[in-house]
Length: 55
Image (cartoon, rainbow, N blue to C red; front, side, top):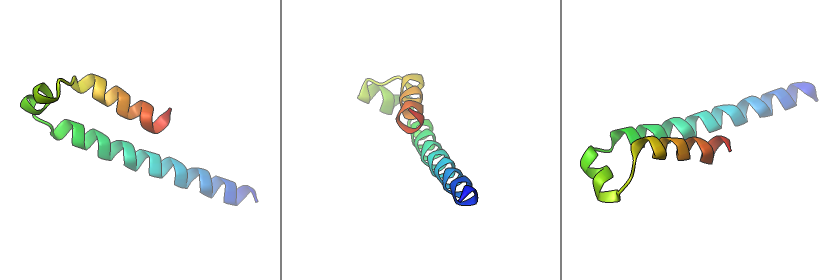
């Protein structure tokens, strides 16, 4: 029972980490022009990505 809980938590953490890394990669790949077109701030987008994944 404890082992399955550890495994489940580890899987959840790995999934969250993978999702966060994908979001960061996508944000980092945006050019300055893309950000201007979206009227977006890269640092704010990274902050929101973190909050969306980790709460």
